[in-house]
Length: 116
Image (tube, rainbow, N blue to C red; front, top):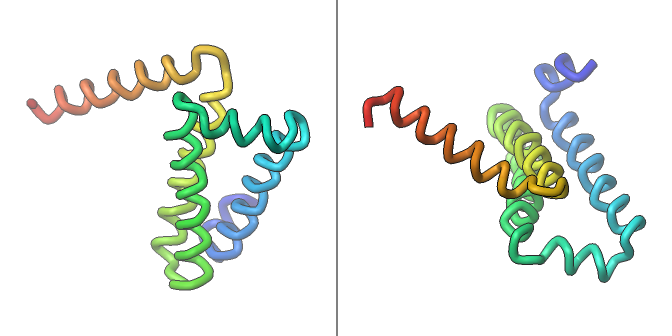
C-alpha cells in the first residue's frame, strides 16, 4: 500500500509519514526521558542529524499542507526518508563514523565518474 499512496496522494503520505516520525522521536523521549533525550539530540555529534531530520519534517509539512505541491511533496518525503535513515544510524555505536566514511567514499566515487 506504500507505493500507491505515495504516487496517488503524496500529500496524504507525507502527513502520515511525518506523524510516524514524530512518534519515533516521542518513543525515544519516553524511553530516555525528555531532558536526557533533548540533551542527547543536541549533542555535538548528533546535532547535524537532528537538524536535518527535523528540517526535513518541517519542509515536508510545509510543501504538502501549505504549497500543495505534488512534486515537492514527493521530493521532501524522499528527503525525509533519507534523513530518518541517517538519524537512526547515528544512534548505533560507530554509526556517525561509518556514515562519514560511506559519504566520503560515495562522493569520491561520483567525482571519479565525472572525471574530477
